[in-house]
Image (cartoon, rainbow over the protein chains, first blue to last red):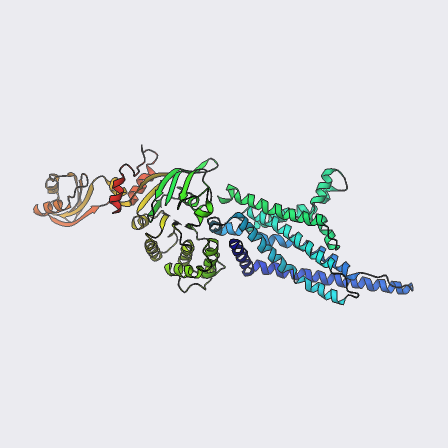
Length: 262
Length: 331
C-alpha cells in the first residue's frame, strides 16, 4: 500500500511540474468554457425566438428545460475534447520512464506490477478529476439561475459518465504508452485506439446481424449518450469498467513481455 | 552472498551471455571487465532482477532472484549505466521516493537520507533540483539511491563513465570506503579502475567468462617470469657476457639507444628475484647503471590477450584449481 501511494504521489508530482499538464488543463478549460458559453447563448436565443413566435400567435410559450438541454450538449462536447486531450496525459506514463531509464529503478525495486500500474492509473484519474471539477462552476452558475431549480441527478450522471469515459480512455492510453519508449508514438497509438472505438459503430451501419450488434456495443460514444441525457444505466457503467480493466490488464501483459525490457 | 549458476540470456537467437557461473563472497568487491557488448550489463540486470534469465539460477543475499524477486530486490542496490533519476525532483524528494519503494520504514527514512547524502558528498544539496546538477553530482545521487536501503549487495554498472578524472578518483575512493560493509559488483571497461578497487576480477568476452581471479594473480600468471628493463652506459657489447651467466636469467637482449647508452631486456624464469644480482653485476662489470625497472604485465595486456585470443585458446583460465592460492592473494 505504501508503494502504491508512493507511485501515485510521484506521478502527480511529475504531472504538476510538467508543462504538458498545464497546457492540457489550460486548453481544456478554455475550450470547454468557450463551448459552454456558445451553447448557453445560442440556446437562450432560440428560446427567445420561440417566445416571440408564440406571442405572435397569441399562445403561451412552450416550457423549455434549458438546464438539461445545455447539460447534455455540454457533456457531449466534453467527450469530444477528451478524445483529443487524453492521449497527451497518458503518452508519457510508461514511455517516459523507459526513455529516461528510470524504469530500471522501478523494476529493480521491490514493487509489484499491480502497485505500479494501479498507482499510475490512480494518478491520471486524479488528474482527470482536476480537469472535471472546475467545470462544476459553469453548471453552478446555470443551476442557480434556473427557475424552478432543476433536479441534480442528471448532472451527477453526466459527471459520472465523463469520469468513466475519461477513465477508459486513460486506461487504454496507458496501455499504448507501455508499448513504446516514444511519447509521440504512444500518443499516436492512443489516438488510433480512440478513433477506432469512436467510429466502430459506423461500420456496423444499420444491419442487425450479431457482428453489427457487437460493433455497435463496442462504440464508446453510444454508451456515453445515456449519461448526457441524465439516464443511469448500469450496463453502461459495466461497459466502461470492463474497458478500464482490459486496458490495465493489457498494460500488465505488455510490462511482463520480455521485449519490454530489452 | 551472490551465487550465479549457468546463467544464459538469449535475445531471440542471439545469446547475450552464455553459461555464466561465479560466486561472490560477503564483503568482496568484484570487478566485471569486458569490452562493450560483452554481456556485463545483461548479467548485472539479471542479478538486479530487471529481467529474467533464459536459463540458469542466480541467488542474491540468500534469495533466488527469479523465485523470490521481491525479497532479493529489497537487498540489492543497483546503479544502472545511466543513473535512473527523475530530474524534475529535488535530491531529497527523489531519495524519499526511492526509500519508500525500496521498503525503508518511514521513521528511518530521514536518517537514511542523511547518511547516504553524507556518504556520497551530497550534504547541503538536498533542496536542489536534480536537473540542475552536474554529471558528477547526478552520479552521486545515483549511488545514494542505490545505498538508501542499506543493501547487502551493491551492483554498479560502469559507475565512473562520463566523469572527469578528479570525479573518477573521488568516486573510486567512495566505493573503496564501502568495502567490507557491502558486497559490491562493479563493471567497467577502464582497467586501472579494476586493479585499484577490486579484490577479484571476472573477464567476460562475447557473453562468456574467460578468466576469474585476483588482479595480481591474473597479471602474474600471464607473465610467466620476470622481465627487467635496464638502461646502461658504457660498452654495450659486454652486457651479454656479464648478465647471461647469472642464475635464472634466460635471455638478455641488448639494443643501442644512442648517446653511448644501451637498453637491455633481461628475462628470468619463474618468480625468482634477480634484480639485485643484475644491478650488482652491471656495476661490477664497470658499466654505468642509469635505470632499472621491472616490466610488469598490466591488466591491460591480460585483458587484450584474453579477449582477442579467446577464439583460438584451448581452455579458459579459471581459479579453482587450487583454492588456497586465492587466499594467499587476498591476505
